[in-house]
Image (tube, rainbow, N blue to C red; front, side, top):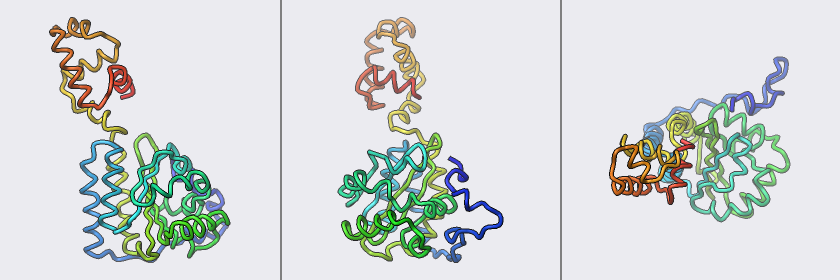
Length: 274
């Protein structure tokens, strides 16, 4: 999704004053500690072998380095589909918040408002503190903040970090904490630094660990996978590759174990999708 599809068309008129949310934030001079926490997050996520593994690593890296207690990672084919993710990664109280969020609040999420989208597109990060300071939020978004975040769950700090995922999909990491000043200006600057770099890591990853495992198979194992995907039986594969049928059975068993597939059919579907 391009940035132009997320930004309101009213913001592009040459004769109109820019929206308040488009005004540049005061420049923050990062401290050594700010760079160190950002580098640690990147280092911990750089070895991820799939998007699923990346989500888990980035959530725990943010918890450890920024001290936020509750984190969620949503994903969708477009920005607006992110909020309808039915199986997000959740840490802390976000797993308990999820049913009510999906049932009542997802369509009113403050980070789905035009002001938040402009921030997420331009800098990769947005926070409730910044958005409420700007003002002009829809009534429903204010209700989401007051009733859902504050009154029900006691979350007085909420920050979102936008990621670019493979195949043009979008990810949104939510970070929540009872302390209103948990993510301050320096933390926001570190997160802005992280958004682009984390996206660069994630964009090239396979969606699942199984697809990642396919790329790590030996050339002979990959030959077997291709023939399984073509619908050949073990005896037919053995004949094609000049192998004993018992050897083919061992190859298939090993490949299933490496990829986590439960059957030949699942392996064939995986190979075709890859």
